Image 1: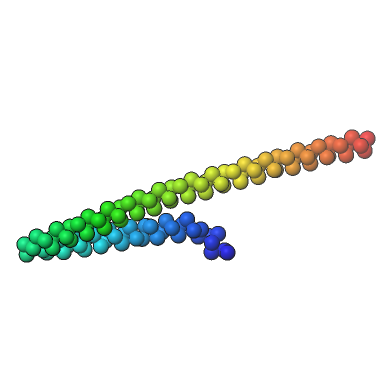
Image 2: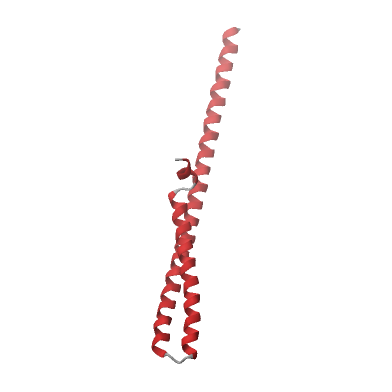
Length: 113
């Protein structure tokens, strides 16, 4: 339970999307190295096939990183708004408590006279 409150499901999702996106981009860099190798050997079919995989992996990786950044911004905003709401509720509660406390003291003072 404490783990879930500290690292909510949304944060884990963001980290996983970021890791997978980064991994796909790294894989596309390695595939790009192989494309250069096959270009030097003049194997056009294998070169085109690897270019397709490289482009696919890099596009999916960038999309996943974009989703991760968007979710991070969303969860950050939600957390900020929740903190602001809790702070305003606490201030309202303290103001009501102070008001009722001062009203109670005024009544006691007038009752003792």
